[in-house]
Image 1 (cartoon, rainbow, N blue to C red):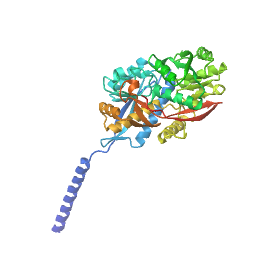
Image 2: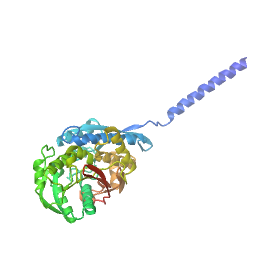
Image 3: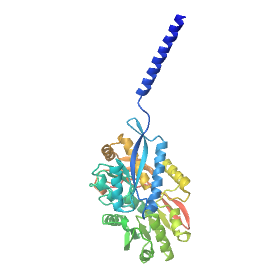
Image 4: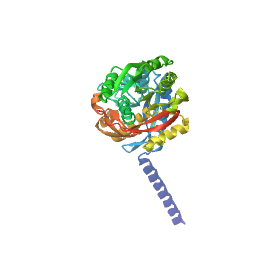
Length: 405
């Protein structure tokens, strides 16, 4: 009997020792819990640009979800989910400055995506002194967007330089006899840096800029005076319009068509044809080309199809698809993974060493050294186009942008 008690006691001691060793071993294992990688988003949730930016914020969250559902990103063996922190830029440059200050000083972010349009010139004076990597959804070639004064600023979507090259490819391939261009722009979409570049590039490509360059306010409500100026340029083969948002395109198309002007509108905007038609109406919805991706189009990368699928499922078949800031987020995450670091300076240095990067539009080329005056802060990537004609939207092809000098 005594022997049995000893055996039982010994067994209990062994069990306690084994359990203790299990607990110690379990706690000694490295944690597999994911961390959060916080990325700020500069988005105009209010003001005139919100008609585009609110949807771009929706798209940004969809791309975040796709990344996180795929396991997030792994850096040095540690897994991270992406957390987005948004600040309202209020469609004003001072709003961008205030939003950037909030993201950096209040929320302590080290990476920022956006803004799009021309607003990013107000980001650099805050972000660069704090060594925060900020990746633009667009640029209009001002020195405070991309350039030597902005060492922590990068393009994640190709901006004015890329769009201009796609538009001339479309003209050469589809409209080889069109040589005379009527130039149009919202005030924020043209400046003293971009205009001479456009003139020189288009002249080198064999195009004539005819008539007055028609510039209208970013927040215009009455487009008839500007449509009249465009209509007065009788020798134009087409209306060449580099920078715009859907509201600009739709309202101008409505005003022009009401004057009987049926000339081709070749617009660099990423606004889908259906979005433009919802603004201008079916009667004005013809002979308009925009640089917009299209669901399940031939040549679409799988990630692009998945993004558009989720956008339409959540926001409807006619939901606008822009993807500028989303492209910036996607490229930023590719570079962070390549750098295997969350240190902005390490990521910056790695970015400048890369020649190629995956984008949501396909393989991208990191370039623009001569154009922007700083090594490898620009990007070129494929882009697709849509044709809106006779109130019908059709895919108008993919166009590959060569490396921007």
